[in-house]
Length: 318
Image (cartoon, rainbow, N blue to C red; front, side, top):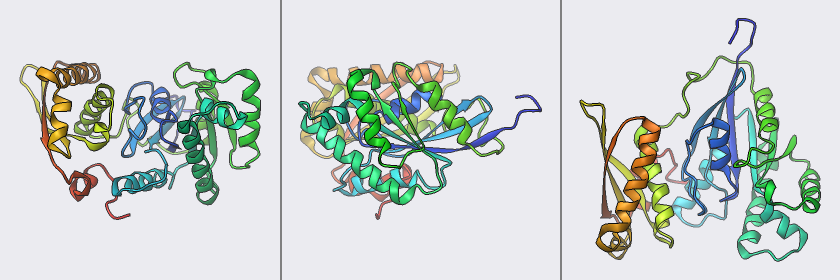
């Protein structure tokens, strides 16, 4: 940055219904993976801060859990964390699953999942009307490349009529559509301020937590029933070895004895596949060889363990 340039820095909350593509969008803006991405909903359980350098602006993106009808303590804590992420933000991005909402809006054959996503999106908009005063709110209509041209304009008009958004940007976080426009809006929305983090830093999350999230992502991708929602991953040990390698020991906690063999798999094949995939991602992230050891243990009440909530920056009593 030259002496004539003025630095800008601030926070931007990325909110939306579960599975709208918030983590994918955050990763795309940062330029590398800082948040887990799966086909399952409610994968982000706490606020992850990714740091995007957009010209002379540093945007600290707060990738939040999805906002939905909370029932359990963990659900309530996640939704609370999402709305907390909007506080003191210089901008807010509301991410919407454009094809799902377009199907509901057009009256086409929409699934129960589409209708639930639309209902959660309405819930987010209702919250934004109460909370987002004096903060620019940008709507990112994500996965727009999956929406037919004749359905895009009614979709944009529907959200434009709400009066909530300062700008509506059709984007594809995976295909790059509209991302430059969104980056320009974010960069301009940041206040003049010295950088909050070193320009080459990608995330403000402890390495142990990132490693646990990588493994949890692979768990979600390997196990295709309710088990991921009944589990958590904790990095118990992290050792930097003399030869430059890293040794990591992690525990996958489940709530029932009957869930252990599902994660282990026949002959240990499932947990080996989880470990191999997680190890590859960790090595790409750290740039060194990783020795990863996974264990599965039962902790029936981990969802009621206050220490776990504190570790991930979640409020226990909400």
